[in-house]
Amino acid sequence: MAPTKSLLAKIKVKPVKPLDLDEILEEPEHTVYGHCAEAFTLHPVTDAERAAWAVARALQTSLPNGQPAEGWGTRVSAMKADGRLVEHNGVWYRRD
Image (cartoon, rainbow, N blue to C red):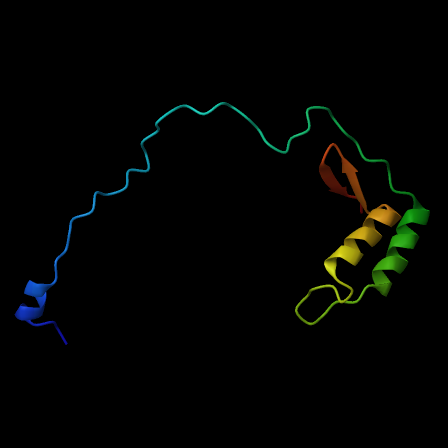
């Protein structure tokens, strides 16, 4: 049902200046975050590591919603311990 004329007369609407997203106030510096300057190569995965990782993955259980049953902290620390996750200069790499 449409509002009546008396209701529209009581509503006060102030115009709002539209937001200009194309306006650039200052030129930002060219900075890349989370990027390593040096080249880093992961060590090749051995067959023994692959076998150990397969056993570790088989022991992991997940809840119906896909979250780890043991919790993310425990799972990530296990992946760090057996070498599936490697950290270099603040960047994490996953070895598979």
